[in-house]
Length: 160
Image (cartoon, rainbow, N blue to C red; front, side, top):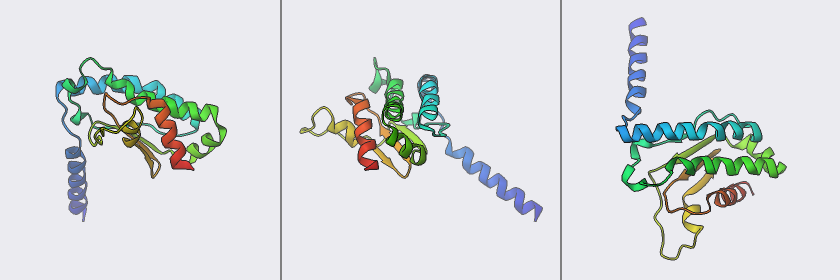
């Protein structure tokens, strides 16, 4: 029985270990800059909204340095978090709802829905944001516009 338990633990830990992708040096640097940029906005989100989010899910294994050259890629996600914090400060009814419903935050490089020829300045960004099952997800790409405004629209739409 003891050996079966040890085998199960080792198997589980191997599965968890294998799930963490190995990052290339540029991806590792980018993630470090992101982690630094996200710390204060995440702390403020928890204080202002009454949430308990400890990490932001990212997929830096999909980060391509050439795609973001000359751009502060690490600022898209903090900007989105700051927009939610502002909602909690400015709109008490949303703070109440978000304190109960916002349980996670994801900023992802993969899964960006493509830009359409008919898109105005907001449609493309809105199409790449969602708030479902407690998690706000933002698929980030450098051509997105009006991030803060579109975060607020996404939250309003999801909660109303």
